[in-house]
Amino acid sequence: MPQVFDKSSKWLMEHHGSSVLRLAGLREVVACRSLQADVVQPRHLPDGLLEVRLRGQSRRRLILVEVATYPEPRVQQQAADDLMLVYQARGVMPELLTLVLRERGQYRVPAEFEARSELGWTSLRCSWKVVELWQVPAEELLAAGEVGIIPWVPLTRFEEPPRDMLQRCRDRIDREARQEERRGLLAVTQVLTRLRFPDPQLLALFGGRQIMIESPLIDELMAERTQENILLVLDTRFGAVPESLSARLKSVSKMKKLEELIKVAAQCPDLKSFAAQLPVERPRPASSRKTPRRRKPASDQ
Image 1 (cartoon, rainbow, N blue to C red):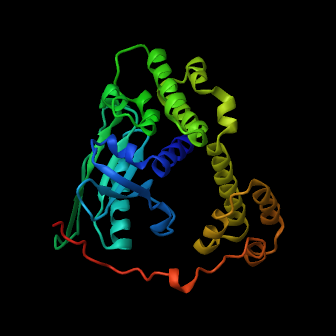
Image 2: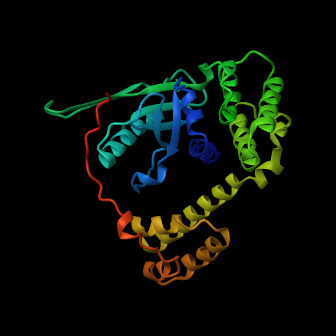
């Protein structure tokens, strides 16, 4: 189930990034796009990296988003790792938002991280903004007038009966969502609602099982799970799978092809034979290739 929550959060950042930033109180966003695929290809990618332009400013800013289902100690380390990953890849220190979805126990995710070397010569300290969703008033989000913020509302603070609030969310999606995004919004709202209200009758307000079957979100989850299973088979048979091969496999999203690759992974004599069955990578035109370089962010004027 955590994978479903993760995928839902990433879908919202890719399609409604500015609404995610509203959760942190950032209201002056006039342009926002996801840069998730532009970072690097390590074993772990940040949950979201957004390029944002604020009202009255010409320079675009980077905002890194880390989403945690529950407050756990590992979230602090992961946030620091992602911050350094983006800084190394881009040479720019991004803003960092850590979004925690559900309260559990007494632990709270810290808003900073510090590490020191054994001899004390070196220290590293970073800080970020933490938003605990259960502390955010639902009415503030509903008043924002952005349909992309609706999926988060069931996890926020409100006094009215859950059914009434969830019905308001469904009504807003029906009225305001574009036709091509309606199923996706209903699906991710249902997924996030389940984290707090697992009652099937309440989940049925967002279409229940049928809307999940019809949603592209489920296709993506099935593809990811199949990719992971293929990598597990290859790792078991041949040892560690090179990152380059793993990246090529993860570019395959069609279930029919992935089902074929499961059989290949179980029968091929070596990794080279498996790689030969993957789609051929198309080299990018020379004009589109960019050499990463570290740069200082321009100061605001």
